[in-house]
Length: 194
Image 1 (cartoon, rainbow, N blue to C red):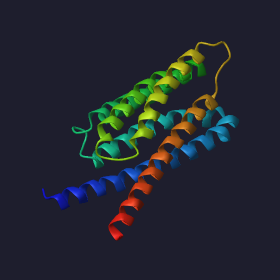
Image 2: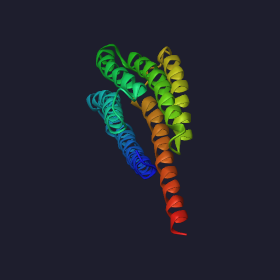
Image 3: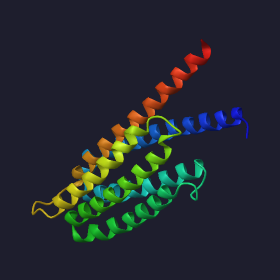
Image 4: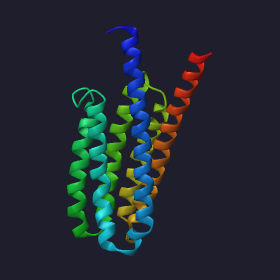
């Protein structure tokens, strides 16, 4: 592979990551808005939203891993897919027991998926910019998971808004990463033009 081929592949991957991060941010914003509106009004819609969130994460990780060299080259994402699918099934079961159980499941998922996201970001760190936000996001997710598990043990029943706040912070991290990659791309283009 020539240097030009490697530059093209790197640029193509950066463009994909930028698009991926914008899509992840956009989905999270829509999910959070739905959680704070219809999710508060209807327990059925709240349950659907709670099931959709880890399902979306599994699908998004699958598409990103497939687009980024396959599951074999992206083991943290491959594991994250399994964790998110298992979480989807656990949320469905936990909904029968109550929101405290659902929040505990989300807590365990936030810890595991956060650490796996952290691993993915560290792996990508040397090749792509904007990974500092993904590192922070992964670490924050793991800490939020511990807090969720603590909250789930409290007598006051939690609601979908507990998860929505977490998702909103995640949206910010994805948006920061997407914007950062856009800035890097614009600076690189300006440098080539001058």
